[in-house]
Length: 243
Image 1 (cartoon, rainbow, N blue to C red):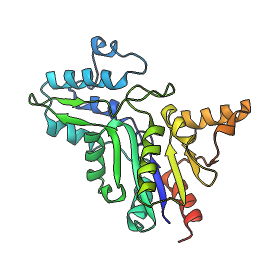
Image 2 (cartoon, rainbow, N blue to C red):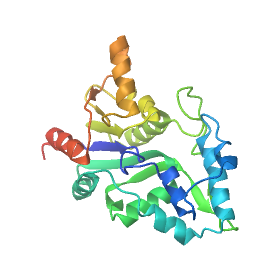
Image 3 (tube, helix red, strand yellow):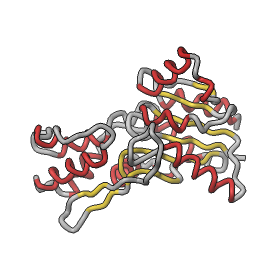
Image 4 (cartoon, rainbow, N blue to C red):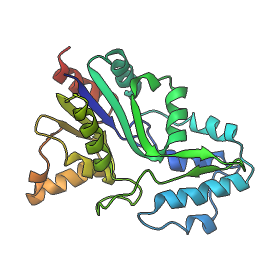
Protein backbone atom coordinates (compact mmCIF):
# COMPACT_ATOMS: atom_id res chain seq x y z
CA UNK A 1 0.00 0.00 0.00
CA UNK A 2 1.17 3.48 -0.87
CA UNK A 3 1.05 6.78 0.97
CA UNK A 4 -0.37 9.97 -0.53
CA UNK A 5 1.18 13.43 -0.20
CA UNK A 6 -1.25 16.29 -0.85
CA UNK A 7 0.24 19.77 -1.23
CA UNK A 8 -1.16 23.24 -1.44
CA UNK A 9 1.05 25.41 -3.67
CA UNK A 10 1.26 29.07 -2.59
CA UNK A 11 3.12 29.55 0.70
CA UNK A 12 3.62 25.79 0.77
CA UNK A 13 5.58 24.49 -2.21
CA UNK A 14 6.58 28.07 -3.05
CA UNK A 15 7.33 30.63 -0.38
CA UNK A 16 5.04 33.35 -1.72
CA UNK A 17 1.73 33.88 -3.51
CA UNK A 18 2.08 33.11 -7.21
CA UNK A 19 -0.90 35.30 -8.09
CA UNK A 20 0.72 38.37 -6.54
CA UNK A 21 4.25 37.45 -7.65
CA UNK A 22 3.20 37.83 -11.29
CA UNK A 23 2.78 41.58 -10.74
CA UNK A 24 6.58 41.78 -10.90
CA UNK A 25 6.33 41.42 -14.67
CA UNK A 26 4.95 44.96 -14.90
CA UNK A 27 7.39 47.86 -15.42
CA UNK A 28 6.49 49.51 -12.09
CA UNK A 29 5.64 46.18 -10.39
CA UNK A 30 2.28 47.42 -9.12
CA UNK A 31 -1.40 47.41 -10.09
CA UNK A 32 -3.40 50.62 -10.45
CA UNK A 33 -6.12 51.28 -7.89
CA UNK A 34 -8.69 50.92 -10.66
CA UNK A 35 -7.81 47.20 -10.82
CA UNK A 36 -7.13 46.65 -7.10
CA UNK A 37 -10.53 48.05 -6.15
CA UNK A 38 -12.40 45.43 -8.21
CA UNK A 39 -11.61 42.57 -5.81
CA UNK A 40 -14.58 41.03 -4.00
CA UNK A 41 -14.24 38.52 -1.16
CA UNK A 42 -14.53 34.92 -2.34
CA UNK A 43 -14.10 35.91 -6.00
CA UNK A 44 -10.32 35.85 -6.34
CA UNK A 45 -10.27 33.98 -9.66
CA UNK A 46 -12.45 36.63 -11.32
CA UNK A 47 -10.13 39.29 -9.91
CA UNK A 48 -7.10 37.49 -11.34
CA UNK A 49 -8.82 37.49 -14.72
CA UNK A 50 -8.93 41.29 -14.56
CA UNK A 51 -5.30 41.38 -13.38
CA UNK A 52 -4.17 39.25 -16.31
CA UNK A 53 -6.18 41.42 -18.72
CA UNK A 54 -4.41 44.49 -17.37
CA UNK A 55 -1.03 42.77 -17.70
CA UNK A 56 -1.91 41.84 -21.29
CA UNK A 57 -2.90 45.45 -22.01
CA UNK A 58 0.65 46.46 -21.00
CA UNK A 59 2.02 44.24 -23.81
CA UNK A 60 3.69 41.83 -21.39
CA UNK A 61 4.65 38.72 -23.37
CA UNK A 62 4.10 35.12 -22.34
CA UNK A 63 7.89 34.69 -22.22
CA UNK A 64 8.11 37.60 -19.78
CA UNK A 65 5.33 36.10 -17.64
CA UNK A 66 7.09 32.76 -17.52
CA UNK A 67 10.53 34.20 -16.76
CA UNK A 68 9.11 36.15 -13.81
CA UNK A 69 7.18 33.17 -12.43
CA UNK A 70 10.29 31.00 -12.64
CA UNK A 71 11.98 33.30 -10.09
CA UNK A 72 9.46 32.66 -7.31
CA UNK A 73 11.37 31.01 -4.43
CA UNK A 74 10.58 27.54 -3.23
CA UNK A 75 9.96 27.15 0.48
CA UNK A 76 13.06 26.10 2.46
CA UNK A 77 13.63 22.35 2.25
CA UNK A 78 10.98 21.79 -0.41
CA UNK A 79 13.57 20.74 -3.00
CA UNK A 80 14.85 18.02 -0.65
CA UNK A 81 11.31 16.87 0.13
CA UNK A 82 10.11 16.69 -3.47
CA UNK A 83 13.33 15.07 -4.61
CA UNK A 84 12.83 12.36 -1.97
CA UNK A 85 9.25 11.84 -3.16
CA UNK A 86 10.37 11.55 -6.78
CA UNK A 87 12.92 8.91 -5.76
CA UNK A 88 10.29 6.82 -3.92
CA UNK A 89 7.37 6.78 -6.34
CA UNK A 90 6.80 3.09 -5.69
CA UNK A 91 5.74 4.04 -2.15
CA UNK A 92 4.44 7.62 -2.50
CA UNK A 93 1.88 9.27 -4.73
CA UNK A 94 1.85 13.07 -4.74
CA UNK A 95 -0.76 15.59 -5.86
CA UNK A 96 -1.13 19.37 -5.71
CA UNK A 97 -4.51 21.00 -5.01
CA UNK A 98 -4.19 24.75 -5.44
CA UNK A 99 -6.16 27.94 -6.03
CA UNK A 100 -3.33 29.22 -8.26
CA UNK A 101 -3.50 28.18 -11.92
CA UNK A 102 -2.19 25.45 -14.19
CA UNK A 103 0.32 27.56 -16.12
CA UNK A 104 1.98 29.12 -13.07
CA UNK A 105 2.35 25.75 -11.34
CA UNK A 106 3.64 24.01 -14.45
CA UNK A 107 6.21 26.73 -15.09
CA UNK A 108 7.51 26.65 -11.51
CA UNK A 109 7.72 22.86 -11.27
CA UNK A 110 9.59 22.57 -14.57
CA UNK A 111 11.96 25.43 -13.76
CA UNK A 112 12.84 23.74 -10.46
CA UNK A 113 13.06 20.33 -12.18
CA UNK A 114 10.72 18.86 -9.57
CA UNK A 115 7.82 17.92 -11.84
CA UNK A 116 8.67 14.21 -11.54
CA UNK A 117 7.55 14.27 -7.90
CA UNK A 118 4.00 15.38 -8.71
CA UNK A 119 1.57 12.91 -10.25
CA UNK A 120 -1.38 15.26 -10.74
CA UNK A 121 -2.21 18.95 -10.29
CA UNK A 122 -5.75 20.11 -9.52
CA UNK A 123 -6.07 23.85 -10.01
CA UNK A 124 -7.77 26.56 -12.02
CA UNK A 125 -7.12 25.92 -15.73
CA UNK A 126 -5.23 28.67 -17.56
CA UNK A 127 -4.36 29.28 -21.18
CA UNK A 128 -3.03 32.00 -23.47
CA UNK A 129 -5.86 33.25 -25.69
CA UNK A 130 -5.71 34.45 -29.28
CA UNK A 131 -4.83 37.96 -28.14
CA UNK A 132 -1.82 36.73 -26.17
CA UNK A 133 -3.51 37.27 -22.79
CA UNK A 134 -3.65 34.66 -20.05
CA UNK A 135 -7.15 33.48 -19.17
CA UNK A 136 -7.94 31.72 -15.87
CA UNK A 137 -11.15 29.75 -15.32
CA UNK A 138 -12.84 28.21 -12.28
CA UNK A 139 -11.66 24.69 -11.47
CA UNK A 140 -15.20 23.45 -10.80
CA UNK A 141 -18.60 24.24 -9.28
CA UNK A 142 -19.54 23.09 -5.77
CA UNK A 143 -21.97 23.79 -2.95
CA UNK A 144 -19.53 23.97 -0.02
CA UNK A 145 -20.16 27.12 1.99
CA UNK A 146 -16.68 27.05 3.57
CA UNK A 147 -14.75 27.43 0.34
CA UNK A 148 -14.24 29.96 -2.47
CA UNK A 149 -16.78 29.60 -5.27
CA UNK A 150 -14.22 28.20 -7.71
CA UNK A 151 -12.60 25.46 -5.62
CA UNK A 152 -13.44 23.16 -2.72
CA UNK A 153 -10.27 21.22 -1.96
CA UNK A 154 -12.19 18.66 0.08
CA UNK A 155 -14.38 17.81 -2.89
CA UNK A 156 -11.29 17.44 -5.09
CA UNK A 157 -9.51 15.20 -2.57
CA UNK A 158 -12.54 13.00 -1.90
CA UNK A 159 -13.19 12.53 -5.62
CA UNK A 160 -9.53 11.64 -6.18
CA UNK A 161 -9.62 9.08 -3.36
CA UNK A 162 -12.94 7.64 -4.57
CA UNK A 163 -11.66 7.17 -8.11
CA UNK A 164 -8.50 5.46 -6.87
CA UNK A 165 -10.51 3.27 -4.50
CA UNK A 166 -12.66 2.15 -7.43
CA UNK A 167 -9.42 1.18 -9.16
CA UNK A 168 -8.27 -0.87 -6.18
CA UNK A 169 -5.96 1.71 -4.59
CA UNK A 170 -6.46 2.38 -0.88
CA UNK A 171 -3.82 4.66 0.62
CA UNK A 172 -2.26 3.48 3.84
CA UNK A 173 -1.71 7.05 4.97
CA UNK A 174 -2.42 10.56 3.68
CA UNK A 175 -0.35 13.64 4.50
CA UNK A 176 -2.09 16.96 3.82
CA UNK A 177 0.32 19.90 3.69
CA UNK A 178 -0.98 23.47 3.50
CA UNK A 179 -1.10 26.91 5.03
CA UNK A 180 -4.32 28.77 4.24
CA UNK A 181 -7.95 29.02 5.20
CA UNK A 182 -9.04 27.03 2.16
CA UNK A 183 -6.87 24.14 3.38
CA UNK A 184 -9.09 23.60 6.43
CA UNK A 185 -12.01 21.97 4.60
CA UNK A 186 -10.03 19.04 3.12
CA UNK A 187 -8.53 18.16 6.51
CA UNK A 188 -12.01 17.08 7.61
CA UNK A 189 -11.89 14.18 5.15
CA UNK A 190 -8.70 12.78 6.68
CA UNK A 191 -8.79 9.61 8.80
CA UNK A 192 -7.28 8.91 12.20
CA UNK A 193 -4.19 7.38 10.60
CA UNK A 194 -3.59 10.44 8.43
CA UNK A 195 -1.58 13.60 9.16
CA UNK A 196 -2.70 17.20 8.72
CA UNK A 197 0.36 19.42 8.37
CA UNK A 198 -0.28 23.18 8.75
CA UNK A 199 2.53 25.64 8.23
CA UNK A 200 3.59 27.25 11.51
CA UNK A 201 2.34 30.80 11.98
CA UNK A 202 -0.10 30.67 9.07
CA UNK A 203 -3.89 30.67 8.87
CA UNK A 204 -4.46 26.91 8.79
CA UNK A 205 -2.50 26.35 12.00
CA UNK A 206 -4.44 29.16 13.70
CA UNK A 207 -7.79 27.77 12.57
CA UNK A 208 -6.95 24.28 13.83
CA UNK A 209 -5.77 25.73 17.16
CA UNK A 210 -8.98 27.75 17.45
CA UNK A 211 -11.06 24.63 16.85
CA UNK A 212 -9.17 22.80 19.58
CA UNK A 213 -9.53 25.66 22.07
CA UNK A 214 -13.29 25.74 21.48
CA UNK A 215 -13.54 22.00 21.94
CA UNK A 216 -14.93 21.39 18.47
CA UNK A 217 -11.88 19.63 17.06
CA UNK A 218 -13.80 16.34 16.90
CA UNK A 219 -14.48 17.08 13.23
CA UNK A 220 -10.78 16.52 12.63
CA UNK A 221 -9.68 12.92 13.07
CA UNK A 222 -6.13 13.23 11.76
CA UNK A 223 -3.01 13.88 13.77
CA UNK A 224 -1.78 17.48 13.46
CA UNK A 225 1.94 18.12 12.92
CA UNK A 226 2.96 21.72 12.19
CA UNK A 227 5.95 22.48 9.97
CA UNK A 228 8.32 25.35 9.21
CA UNK A 229 10.32 23.86 6.35
CA UNK A 230 10.21 21.03 3.87
CA UNK A 231 12.73 19.21 6.06
CA UNK A 232 10.17 19.05 8.89
CA UNK A 233 7.71 17.43 6.48
CA UNK A 234 10.36 15.07 5.15
CA UNK A 235 11.25 13.90 8.67
CA UNK A 236 7.58 13.19 9.44
CA UNK A 237 7.19 11.36 6.15
CA UNK A 238 10.26 9.22 6.73
CA UNK A 239 9.21 8.40 10.30
CA UNK A 240 5.87 7.09 9.05
CA UNK A 241 7.04 5.32 5.89
CA UNK A 242 9.94 3.50 7.54
CA UNK A 243 11.46 2.67 4.17
